Length: 557
Image (cartoon, rainbow, N blue to C red):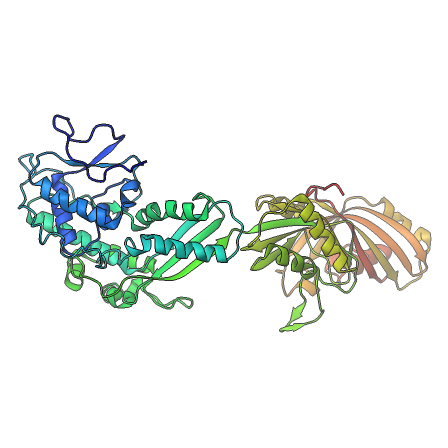
């Protein structure tokens, strides 16, 4: 199927002088001629010319560079001879536009007589002497030229394919050199001056954004080459970072005029970031800009370089429940002053298998509360979630997840996992709710200094909804703020063992410090088992028997 004609000849007798049969028309009119003539003559590429004429047809930008140039030159020759307008197909919806400067009141498409002033005829030999196919555009620095060609698209796709990602769609992002905003402003001011000299109102103060135009051109090519659609909501991102060797040189005058806009940053190689340059352009006066930068901008010495072509997959989240059977295993790596205290952790025993299978760059581990290194987690286990950052593999069947769970369980006798499954980021919020709102059940082995009989502890079974005031424990004061937290012991059940030992089963509010409830933490938890029994008490063993959070969903074995 043939593409629509780029610049169509006027149709005699039609009211709007446009070609019949095309769905929606946006004409290049006589008032666009000085813009086209000036920009082409100063070395602006045809696609940037269309941007400055606010042409919103995506299809037009996809036409070959040489064809666009010929059609614009043809327009310059014909527009002086024809009273009507030359039309462009804009079957695509209007685009986002870049606002360059506040508009002036009173600007219109016509002069005071209601007519567009006549312009001198275009000189076929000079109108586009600078915009030759091999020249670098003085506005986009080549971004809308060679980086739109099939060769560069193939290079991007080779990088994507070699990275070996799983994806069903993609989102494309681009980072541009900061001085493109400077050159864009300079070109616009040049057009503004030209229109004033001709007695014409200067054009609207917005143009098609360079990034938008570039994506219009590149999206269909990438889609065809990769075999998947472009989707703004896709979790798989393909990004290109463009740089230019003269960025600092061309932006330096802005630092002199607006020094407060440019502040050194630790992680930035140059102060001339995109946001800093835009801020300075908003602040600098027009006359100061004209003094320090040519308008329209001069021809560049070099084109942009594609410094980086990167791929990144959105995070994948895996959830489950873990049991910890060791009293010598921390939940997360135990490192003090750079020295590892224990060789492994719950987090590492689980994540190493997930990292290998999902081929992720890194991970973040979270859980519904945490147990101490010497505390076991029994029963149905503790809910956990792992965020896998930039995974190369994202699709797993239920059977594959079951085998992955089995591999984790076979690798160590210190932990076991169950209900391993893929979840969404939003679903993890249900796990975090349980940290403060749900209940937890514990089993504690307690020692007393004075001998006890069975009847000395049976009263504990009758205590319900015991309110505690717990000052931040001394053992966690280095990582938690000092505060008094009110907690509830819902129920207790005692099991007598001997004169100095008994086991206590407790159901508590989440967030209760059980060890401190037993020994009192030098009076920082009141009341405590020691004060209730009127003797010194300490905890020898503690097990988490249940974490009452109904998440993640239980899976069939």
